[in-house]
Amino acid sequence: MSAISRRRVLGTLAASLGAPALLRAAKSGRRLPIAFSTLGCPGWTWPTILDQADHLGYSGIELRGIQGDMDLPKRPELTGSARAQSRRDLQSRGLVISDLGGSAHMHEKDPALRAAQLDDGKRFIDLAHELGVPYVRLFGDKLAPGEPKEEVIKRIVDGFQQMAAHAKPAGVTVLIESHGDFTNSPDLKAILEGVGSPAFALLWDAHHTFVAGGEAPADTYKQLGRYMRHTHLKDSKPEGNDHRYVLTGTGVVPVKEQVRVLASNGYKGFYCYEWEKKWHPEIEEPEVAFPHYVKVMTQYLNEAGVEA
Image (cartoon, rainbow, N blue to C red; front, side):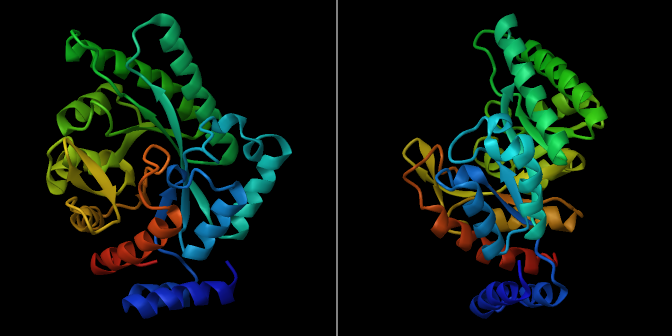
């Protein structure tokens, strides 16, 4: 971001929020550790993703598809000679890719399906290595009906051990997300300890451990904090038998407390906004949700003592 545009963005936000942290960021030329997942902007092109992240003051981008295409290793922006240009485009704006959001899941039992998932995970790890991205998110995902949980966890541990073994020499860390049927700390801890690799850690989807797992933020952190490398933050309200995603700070999820818990314990990763527009087209557009997140998260981080 140019000095002029940076001052304009930070100055506008500071004026609307009265946020000293933003003024300090403007003075230092650094940004707060906030990122967004491209799951929230499935219609945006690669240049639009970069321009909007830069303009709004984000410092990181989690790649979870581009223009709705989830097969990142095949995206033209990330292959061949275009890959080097994309890295230059990121660097020129002061942006980084926080992680790659892969879809491979380790619960599969069928040999052919399992092999396909493992191969897909390796493709994403290889792409992360080529892009210089530190993390790849993969899933444990599902418990098989009628199969003991311990057997499924054993299979998931084996899959992640293979992923970590592939990732370690590439300088990449594989992250399991608190997602699907694995949103409670005891199960996640069993997997993390079972894999037992420095190339394997946790992506804390703080919404899911609260809404689906029924855990208070401090309790989740107490059990899993040492494994947390990345986060997904979002808010929601009950709607029927489910929840509807809403703008940050307007729902029932204690996002502010989640930020406080992370910050007070020395968390150094991104506070990443996962606005699930790809899966829930009825929720607000990214042009609304993304600027709102910057405003609210600036307040939360400022109050938690996190500076740019």
